[in-house]
Length: 193
Image (tube, rainbow, N blue to C red; front, side, top):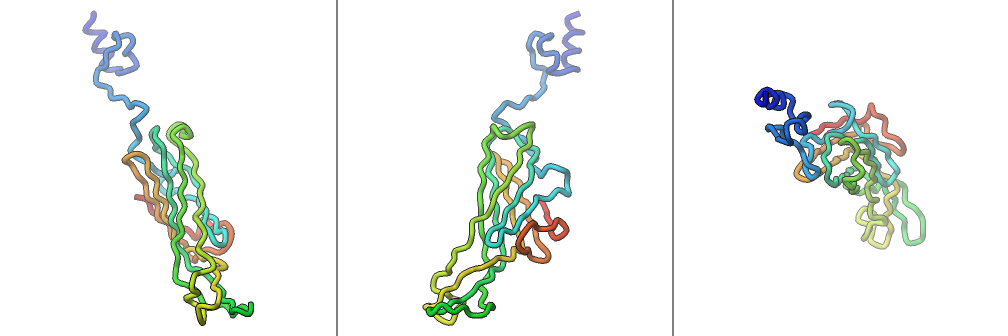
């Protein structure tokens, strides 16, 4: 009789651990410090985060899934082409066209393990803004002028999510480059790894 009960517990696993005298018959269980191994965007393989061009910064939001019970760090690196103006010492603004090279702006969000519910958690973060005015006015007629970035057209964004030893990298490109406001999903293409 005891061998039949033992065999039933082996076949049914941990659900019978109480009936089998608390014995563990090989069923591996995760404790609260272990983590999932498949961080991904919630919603399936074609899921993409939502982006908003705020003029001088880029915001991203979405929901993560496949998470364990550890703190998470979400990083955003947004690359774009700035639009700038040059102002002479008398205060007259030169016509547009003196545009600096592309910039990469970053932002970070830390999410505590306690915010994770059933392996999922939303995220939302915004990049820092560019340095403006630009020191030395390198794209203006001389160093006495003031060069100010007035807008950024974002061309790409990389989101990196880390939790313990696991990570997710989502690289998104915008075509055409963004303009102020919500970025239409039809203009966003992302790949995850």
